[in-house]
Image (cartoon, rainbow, N blue to C red; front, side):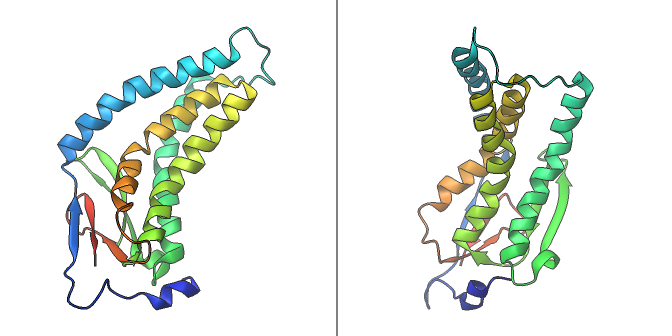
Length: 189
């Protein structure tokens, strides 16, 4: 628990909590519409930068290892969410729950404790930054095509988190927020 967490206070007295939820089917349609152009555009951008140029180094990885790394990155993505939530949640890892939803077709990380909006934002964006944007930036700087593909796929894996982050921008960073206990979304207290 961070030292700042001890000063958690609700929004203001007399203010009721605000629930922000997402329709999983609608969110899936939006994300699918974004994924294909984003991936193709990211591959084309890489080719535009590196076509006809010598790469700084080559990485030769067996195809099965590429698939395995992307599959393993899915639970790692959720573990990163959990680690950041645990850092800021009053009860640490006791507050973090991992699971899978057949209805949504996704694995998830749920934080049972309330945290400040700024910490919720960090927990939401950490996997996309660490597994997606950093490898993508590295690939664009070095010319390693497989890392570019990996970074694109893991950035795509964080687009739902990015949409939540955008929703959170309208809330003061010191307000208290908690994961919705039953729906895809959150409650600002």
